[in-house]
Length: 66
Image (cartoon, rainbow, N blue to C red; front, side, top):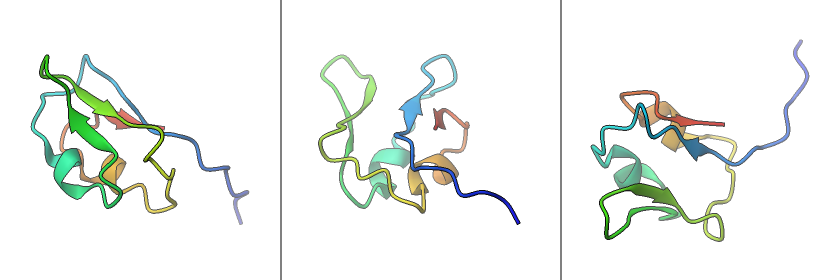
């Protein structure tokens, strides 16, 4: 049996991100957005570091990591 990790905040690897907006559409807390320059950003005031990590698992490019 593994040891449970503390929930870490996700971050975006911009060298991998293709700006597809899948993460924006799937974040249940609306913590991910596209800024005026077209970069995907995470609002850490809204991010709950949820245990399901839906943003990480739904990114088709693996650009969101923890």
